[in-house]
Image (tube, rainbow, N blue to C red; front, side):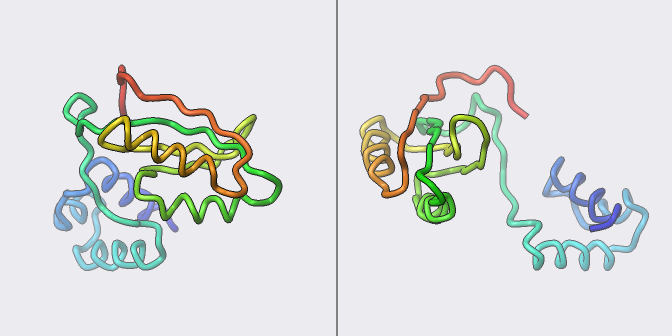
Length: 141
């Protein structure tokens, strides 16, 4: 990945809906170059998709919780694969310290959160968890 790719990704992070023509103009290259670069970044798996970010105060009414997870032994890869297939896991992060993984959970009701927690806590390879419910956002990206 060169400087052009990095600058292109920076512009797309700021606004993924920016037109190819605008990106080309800002980066002083042709539209074809931008099209090719985006296609290669997608093919290489550097761009996984495009999304809409909402202000925290207008996001859906889902309950958001953060689950810190301790993994037994060398089971991290297995646990990551299991969690990646769980629909309620909106984000999954490797971390250091006391916990091995941090999972962002999103569910519509507290009952469904309870069901998800019960299901995840019983996965073979998870030794301990701690969950906190997201109450309010004071600052977002």
